[in-house]
Length: 257
Image (tube, rainbow, N blue to C red; front, side, top):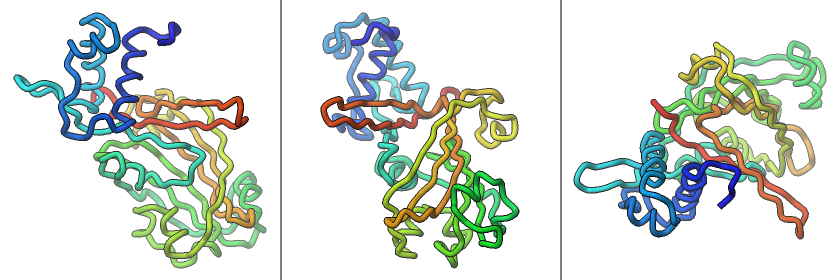
């Protein structure tokens, strides 16, 4: 274990890894405090604190007289892979949901210069704009603002936007998305977004600026995706021999929700 983090936090990370690896399924009985103490060589107090933290997050559930059970699995994914939020939520046993907050058609000349430059469109080209709230088990996790090149997704409807845009593009339109360029910034969540995410204004968050491309390098979307900081844990792993890195995130239920 690393010495830079409190022992209970190191233990939390180790227990999460167990869930992600598939050692336990939803509904399975989880390790007891005694078993955690023996396996990780920690005190009973530390084991209790780690379990209590995971119960408060909604990952585990305590049943009086029976023990602690797996309530839901953390939602983790490699940010370099082009897999939709909807799919990953379902794979983790969570129920995905989307609230469509806005949907309109614009001309490229009416949007910010950054958007136009990212999408490589002319002033008269058409763009679809949507703003969406993404949820897992009914809990708001993400506020997304996305611009789509209209000619790549003609016929997209509000119902399509309440599901996976990625699936609409690849399955319905036959657009081959092969890559994306992403920049992640640490931000404080504004009052407006905090109302949508049901959190306190100023809470730490992650803002991802993402541009998706076809196999020919043609831009399809530009999106600003705001993640709640208390729901996501970003991790980076580096393989020195293969000289590449990847970042993954884990979704958990925020404390008090």
